[in-house]
Image (cartoon, rainbow, N blue to C red; front, side, top):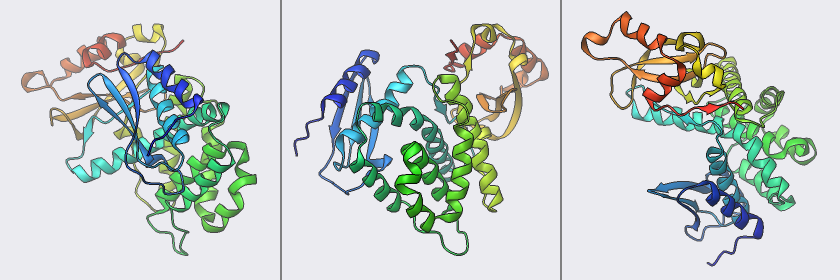
Length: 320
């Protein structure tokens, strides 16, 4: 099937190519048309110097391609990223935690992505109807007794809040309230919390991601479900001023021994937490042999933040 992307999507490809040193291309994979939209209908594949946006469902090619392109553009424009440097030793559990950490991070990124899509007319009534169908194809109605799918329902409904924005009540509240009363009530509260302060800068995005990680865990615990611990497990890149980069590590961060291991070396991990928001901001593998001593950590604490991040090859963002 030959797909012609519209002018807005084409110009978005051009913008992304301006910021990316290689080439960014949209590819259509297969012929599937499910009749709804969902964020798993495309993926970003990096191959050497090229990025391919692979769209695997052709129900709404412009919406789906532009959505992924905007995620790529945010990274290229210096918004924070997340990294997974810790391992529990259980591959399946690691993968589950990584998926959930990424989904939660993406919800906050969607505040920027959806606003840009709306600005360019890439979301219309038809896409809004297809998005509702996508929700109904992702989560089943709540049973009388809460089950372990509450996590997915909560995630999906917070994201729906971001997608519909101020149209949420008029467009979908009634339908969603009928099938998901408990998870919607919780999603309402969390959405309010992550939109109290704007997500219009790298700093704003990071702040709201950290807030969402914490609020999501609180809600899971209130339902008697296991927390995800993204504040500990997921590394979020730091957004710091020039002045903060010049400070000593011990002025901004506290380093704790973790029960998990550092993924590359498989050695015990030490995690650097930001003192302001207690978010995992970098991971250090335990030093080998004689180096594993208080003197080693004193040396790290005495470095400047910039020096440590450069030693660790840890990306950071300078707060303007």
